[in-house]
Length: 434
Image 1: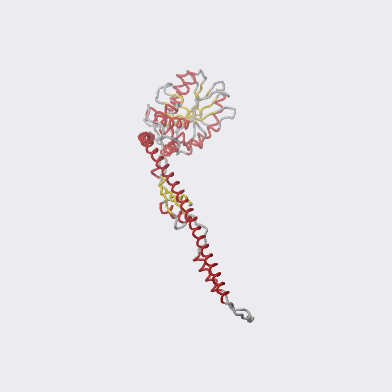
Image 2: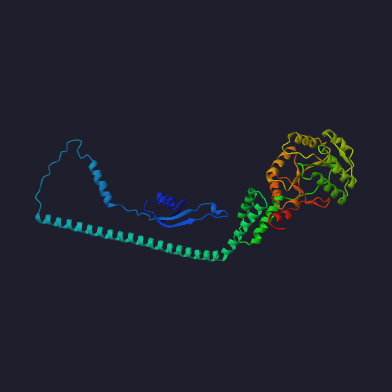
């Protein structure tokens, strides 16, 4: 007997495949529904597996069929001779009556013996065939009984396991749903939330605790942020730091905070340059900070004046350059900033910091990051974290731009309300912690 398994989208499709291969007389032994796996299994459809069997045919000749074939062959033979047949005359001799009777008796004996042998042989063949069939049936029954027993035992074990693990699985699934909703509430873009869920699906979350699941997500999100770095002043002096970004994000205040950290905490020589000639108040605000920190401030009106101003400050460790804020839709001002940054002499090291507000809408942040990417590569400083309760935009822009998040600010106090970006603290907030 041949036993095979066939799969299809429906029961009917699987059965059709079985009959197509094994024949119309195939016997369907079992039909099993295969349900999809995974967190999002409800979005997928089940498939079906059919186990079918076919009895192997014995190698014997169908005598009825052979007789019919012989008759057909006989009908197609032309019995007409190609040339006349001459039958020679045989001289008839009278047969002795006793001799004739003896010949008839011997003929009957021979035929009787042949019939007896033939009948005996046929009985033996039928008996052997029956024994072979019975043997196969017994083997098949043994196989089916063993398979049934194993399936029953396996089903019992699965029921016991599901009974024990059912509550934990339900608890974990409920937790994952809460986790999903928490990230969405924190304004993490749905695209990135789904990525996190897809990564979680690869983890064996069914058999693990809620703490394990949370720890796994926490670690993966920290890795997504990468390792933040503060300002590195090693290398050639002076290092030139450009601060760019849209209006109203707090660039000038952020520059004052960075300058205070570098001078007060690290003892570095700091100088200011401002290219923001669009707002008189901006230069005056920076001059106030320069007087407090006792640092020089120069105003530059063109890219050509930048290198001249830097040459006069060559004995300083770092020069912080304030730029004009502009709408990301203003092409002319964008080009002015681009020329200013590109005009730095190659003998100086420089970096660009894009200052963004954590209160800005995600769609606007995408447009802003794209515009400034056309100007230069940059690192990111997020401001005004004290003015929002959601931090998803930080993760969104990090993953969208692939730029390093270096600093965050959370207030107006100089120099206290600024710190190197702490990915662990932000991830805890994103996951609903404090």
